[in-house]
Length: 272
Image (cartoon, rainbow, N blue to C red; front, side):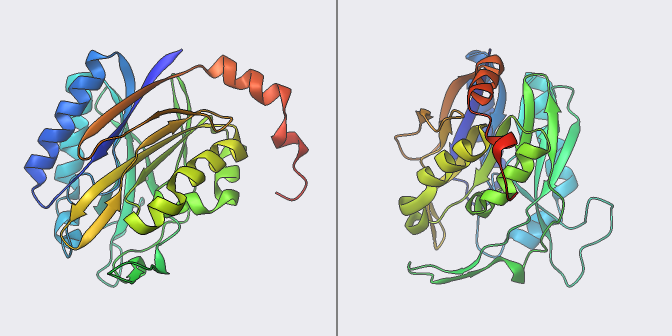
């Protein structure tokens, strides 16, 4: 059994201040003997119109979070960073970028990269109304499952949570945990955030790690309520305050495998 940590942040446009908060949370998680920490979407910078400027610093910011992983000997799911190039190094055309989640080992090395597949092009009943990520971002096209010493992590990002077939695909590729760095709007988060995390956990029989932004970020308001639930959808930990928070829960892979064996959903599926 291992301990896994999930954060909640209220990231703004000050990258150094955001990194300072992240490092403190990493230190707190390490002090409590957690082996993995998950950061939310846009952890390094969350401000209107800053995605392209932040993307220009991708390599620098990636190196900074790798250094933190090495210094504190932690596995890190580095939320998301905007990246100006595809996994093969080709520059994203049309002045767009990709929303990229990194898995970083305690050796300070990026061992996996997942580019967000489902883009948030929707109408939301809040004061902003329309969100169109595809104006700024190019969608990824490859699901990613990364092996770690404590289990295989299927990497998701925010809006991906609304697509059960994607989570089930990750399970089919060997996922035993799902990471979900997110920045749900207050409106959609209040309605669906907890339900989606529990549903994806039950769909896949994976522990699900939902790391969220919370609060105001310029004109944006996010829901927060970072959450860890086990493979039957039971909530193990959830943030209950505003701002930067840390939650930790145990993960027992043997116990999860017993749950899967007693209800073998994957082998019973007919249409996926």
